[in-house]
Length: 290
Ligand code: ATR
Image (cartoon, rainbow, N blue to C red):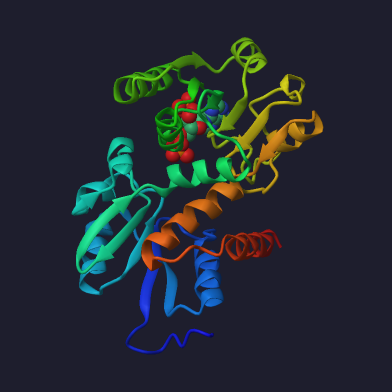
């Protein structure tokens, strides 16, 4: 069944952020709506910081069903909502809003999406030794969900203070095992020797710096799972080096697709057509690269 997309029943979703040129979310969600014949449409809205409150009020006024929130609004949006999912509240950032009759509830499907991609690969975080690179906003969302699921974490960051603060929060909120270290070759060598999973949350290796990596290739081994949240390029230098050494990999596009799938379910109440969303994101990415 094809959606008509022109009746009064049409529901609107979208993404707000700034800048927004390279978002893959409209392609993913519109393909998903279309494949299920849902009368929904998803649009990008470029919203500068000074207009965030007006945009959220506008969501209520225009009965926009759902929004994704991206850089730079994920933290500021939280205070403008009526209700928060407990994990979004702990993380202190939202990337998805659901509007139910004017009541706006915030979620963090970045965290849930990261986890879903891991589970989809057949990997349970409980009891795993996980090394994380980076201690920014993305690392906070991911380390919180991993801590909640019972993983033990080592967080390495260029700025040690930021990693120590994050580890302090993890211990306090989840009472779980976590350690902060500076991002040095010596520390990396030591912690990777005993690790099950390496997660890169730092923005290193992203287009236009696709050749860069934080991890010397000789530190990879088979038996390690390497998950890079960078999704441009789809296969980063880090993932290529890991794969060449026989390690398993998860590309960042998987986290993007699964966070989108979680948002889709929250807005529509239906299971997301994950493969449709993945293919739409890959097609759109290929278009960007041409
Ligand atoms: P995000 O929300 O994507 O996590 P962020 O909060 O700006 O973005 O955090 C970026 C992360 O990438 C940080 O951990 C940052 O390290 P610092 O806290 O030391 O700045 C890390 N990062 C960015 N560029 C880096 C580089 N060239 N080398 C090492 N780490 C880098």
